[in-house]
Image (tube, rainbow, N blue to C red; front, side, top):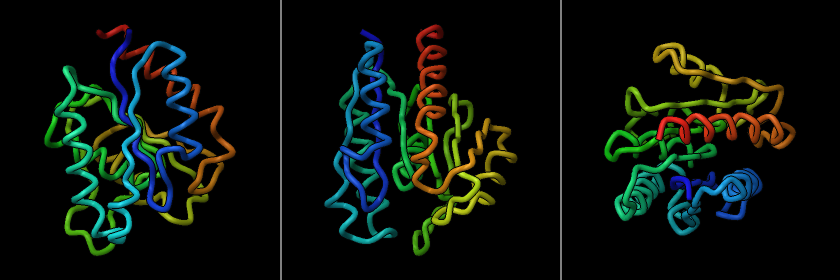
Length: 175
């Protein structure tokens, strides 16, 4: 059995959302264990109000594990995955459609230095403009794959799945 992956959905979504479900199925087919926390109760608090409870839920999930997990997140799930990595060890991060800030929330997006990370974003993201994550990636010299897609990245799932598989292969080799 490979390592553990925690996949975090975006706001106005759920643990059965297309992106996290597709990636979880791929990972499981390759022998990885997956979890998809349900943040819908937290999301009822609004965008800014949901961040701290989401981080607490994610941290609690991570702390129950015997080994650092790979965190995968979409939109708000990406935002909280990055912030959680500052406080608890993680094996890597795959972050999709990442907001650089959440209006009304005091902290900007951040993540732990040195953690293997891949950022994927859409050129036409109408919810989380590319500029914020592009600046962040440039400052940290992180890989950023920009696709001809919108916030949902629905037209790019094949490319995202291929990149995810490469990341899983790299993590398996490093273990």
